[in-house]
Amino acid sequence: MSDAQTEFLSRLSTNTATVAVIGQGYVGLPLAMEVVRGGFNCIGIDVSQGKVDGLNAGRSHIIDVTDAEVQAALATGRYRATADYSQVSEADVVSICVPTPLRKTRDPDVSYIQASIDSMIEHLKRPSLVVLESTTYPGTTDEIIADRFREHGYELDKDIFVAFSPERVDPGNEKYGLKNTPKVVGGVTSLSTELITAFYSRVVDHVHPVQSAREAEMVKLLENTFRAVNIALVNELAMMCDRMDIDIWDVIEAAGTKPFGFMKFTPGPGIGGHCIPLDPTYLSWKAKSYGFYNRFIELATDINGNMPRFVVQKLLRVLNEHGKALKGANVLMLGMAYKPNINDLRESPALDIWQLLETEWGANLSYHDSYITSVPRFSATSTSLSPETLKATDVVIITTNHSDVDYQLVIDNAPLVLDARNAISGNHPNVVTL
Ligand code: SAJ
Image (tube, rainbow, N blue to C red; front, side, top):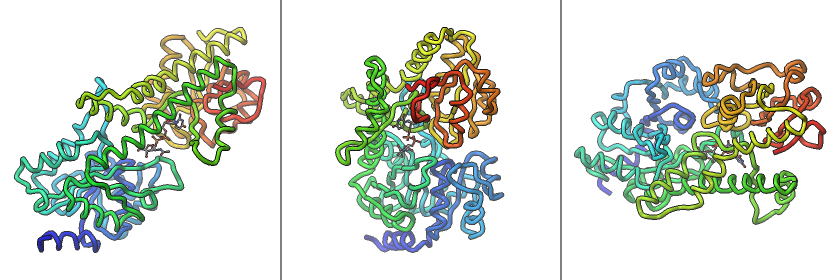
C-alpha cells in the first residue's frame, strides 16, 4: 500500500472520516444514523428539500427511524441533511442509497444511480470510497460507477475506490436492523474490498467480504429471488389445495413443525414492496444478455402476479354461495399496506385487488388501514372499523394482517369474511380462508 492509501485506510478505521449518504429514505436514513453512532461525521444528501428540512428539524419520515434518533444524531453535531450535492466534496466515503425501480418495459431503471454519479463526479475528494447499496444487477457497480469515474480521469485504487454492499433492510423488523445484520461487501478491486471492510467494521457488528462487487450484487439477488420463488411455491400450492379442498394453512403449519430442511412461507393475495416483486427481474434481465433464460424467476413472477386475480375469483365463488353477486356488493378491504404493521403501499397487491373489483366487477369498495390514512389513486380514505361499518358490508377481505385490528369485532359483525392472510384463527361459519 502507498502512504496515501495507508493514510486513507487509517481515516476509515479511526472515525476521522466524513461519510455522505446519498438518499435519506428507508435505506439511507437508517444507514446515516448508524454511521453517526459509529462515530463518523455524516452528511445526509437528498433531492427532497422537504425531507431535508424535516430531518434538520429533528423529524423522521421513515417508520424504522424515530424522531428521537434523528434528534440524537443532530445533537452530536456530526449529522446534517442537505439537498446540496456539492457538499459531497467534504466526504471520504459516499454511500449511494437511491431507488432502482423497473421501467414500464420491466427492464432495470438505473437512472437514479447515474444521476447521483453525475451530481457528485465534479465534487468528489481524491481519494474517495464510493459504495452502492441499492439492489441492482451484477455488473452495475463496475459498468456504471467504476467505468464512469475512470472515463472522467479518476484512477482506480488511487483517486477512487469503488464497492457494492447490498442493503438488507426489512421494514418493520424490530429484531434485525442495520447494526446486527451481517453486511456483505465486495469491491471492484481487492483494495476497495479491504477499505469497505474497514469502514463497515466500524459501523456494523459483522462484515462479510466477497471477492468482487459483482458477487456482492448477486448475493442480494439470490436472497430476494429465493423469497420470491418460495412465496410463489406456496401460492401455487394454495391454488392447488383450493381445488382439492385441502386447508393449505393447516398443511403449512404442520410442515413448519419439521425442525430441519424446511422454511415456512405463507400464501397471500400477492407480493408487494420495492424489492421482492422487482429484484428477481433485475437478475433475469441481466442473465438474458448472456443468453441464459431463467425459468424460476419468470414462473414465480407469473404466479405471484396472478394472486390478486385468484383472490377475486375466490370472492366471486364465496359471494355466489351466499346468493350474492359481486356487482354492487359492499366490499371492505382490511389492510392496504403491502405487509403487516408498516405504512408502505408500494406494489401492494391490495391495490391490484381494488382495481380489479372496481373496474372489472363494479363492487362498492371501502377500506380500513390505520397505517394508510388515504389512497389517492382511488380517492379513498380509511374508514373506521365499527360494528356499523362491518354490518353494512356484504364481505370483508383481509388483505393485510395488521396486528392492531380487533379481529373478534370483525368475526362478530361482518356477515362474511375472506381471510387472504390467515389472520383469523379457528373455524367460524362466516370466515373463509384463501
Ligand atoms: N410475502 C408472502 N408470503 C411470505 C412472505 C412474504 O406473501 O411468506 C409477501 C409479503 O406480504 C410482502 C412481500 O411478500 O407483500 C414481500 O415480503 P418481505 O417479507 O420480503 O418484505 P420486504 O420486501 O419489505 O422485505 C424484504 C426483506 N424481508 C425479509 O427478509 C423478511 C428482505 O427480503 C430484503 O432484505 C428486503 O426486502 C429488501 O430490501 O430487499
